[in-house]
Image 1 (cartoon, rainbow, N blue to C red):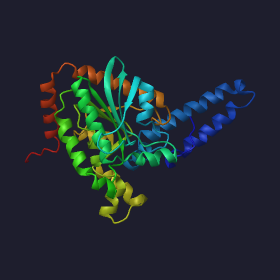
Image 2: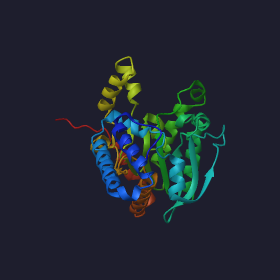
Image 3: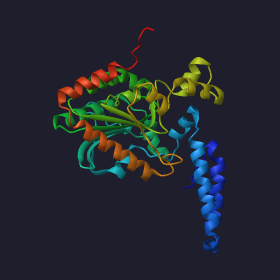
Image 4: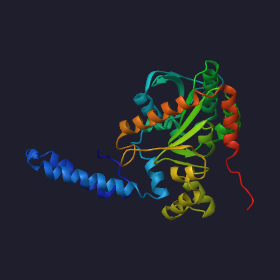
Length: 320
């Protein structure tokens, strides 16, 4: 599938796709079926090679691809009977976080996720996926409702970070995230979280304290964005410093697995989720259902104790 947005390292693939589209549109396309099949095979091999050796900075670019599936897309593809719930009952409704009940496979669950928006108007309304405190308060109220009814919680993380503006700080941004960290750690119901795109800092952790945490193959998850890190360390964010920062941050799924910060990596279609959202959603749904089945065997007390121990172990060091 060709896209209107081209990542720099995808240019050879885009050229092949143009050739395929041109040949496929010819009236005598059937007579050149073998040539078309050869070009398609070359395209798949090239995509596999390129995406098999992405740098951390290129992984960040893939995670930010404008056609990459977002929370609302996955809800449409894997959830049945979804009913969205709005508002934090204190200030208002933050559109950068979606909450609602729905069915995933045979499981009734609460779904919570960051939403960036597609069009310019949607992105502005969603603050480009950067939630305000009312977004985190909305998420927590709905999570407590799920706990009350004994339903599991599924969260989709996709944010460059919590909204850093003055008004958000005045309304208690840090307190709202800190409260979510505390309360999620002791919710007496299964919680699973998936980083589907960007997983930036406390904005990600605000809905990311879970019994099982996974990352899509080409997502990133880190204490800070590469640009933010570069601006601090080198006083400027450009191609060179962003590349260095992304490598230093160990933000890819592979690095996070190695460092024990996530439990699983969810495989994406060749060329990333933006090339085949349906296949990506199928892999995601399978992991969610398997994880919920696994967590069913633990009672509420055991879930909370294991969750606490899981996060306490992160960052532990031993003297050599």
